Length: 234
Image 1 (tube, rainbow, N blue to C red):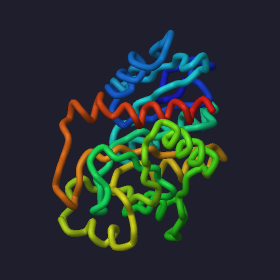
Image 2: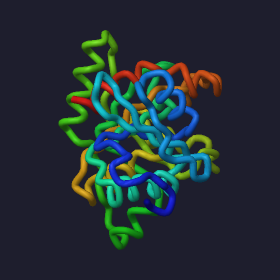
Image 3: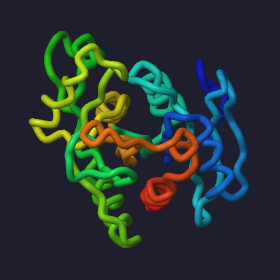
Image 4: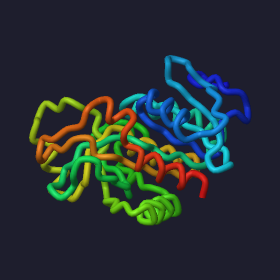
């Protein structure tokens, strides 16, 4: 057991999907996994393990933001020897050609968080995805007839920014979307020598100001879930 996850040794699979929303974890377990067993409910941050196409897969909610995902990723990598962690989350589009419900595969993550400044003594670190996972996910998405967008994202500490135009700087430098967790996941995967990937569904656009509903964000982004599961068992 760890501080925030009460699973017994062996209860968590080597491959784990990481949705921010614990109710999305519950939805995935109930919709896609066979013989799913709940191993965690501490702070209502639900975790489940089951079978997908006969292979053991876990799904663990992480909450919102870098401090929250840091807790769960650290414990999964350190205490439960998770080898592959795949974030499945939502993001806001920063480019005009990226539409609602598009699938984004994050190659790397910039950030305005101070976490890595503390960790690296003011130096910069470049948090990047695991290429084998990235290629597997891209191939799985294409095989299903999807057209994923592949590129960098920005992991922001502020959902409600003081400067509402700040996103345009990140967009100018090619970031596809903004979210709140990927930079920390990729950093911790590098620290523990594990594999990590972020698959993101566009839930809103800072360019067009379009948005999706809370219910849709919780249960309707199944393309991302299917690609993540296929990647997890490959």
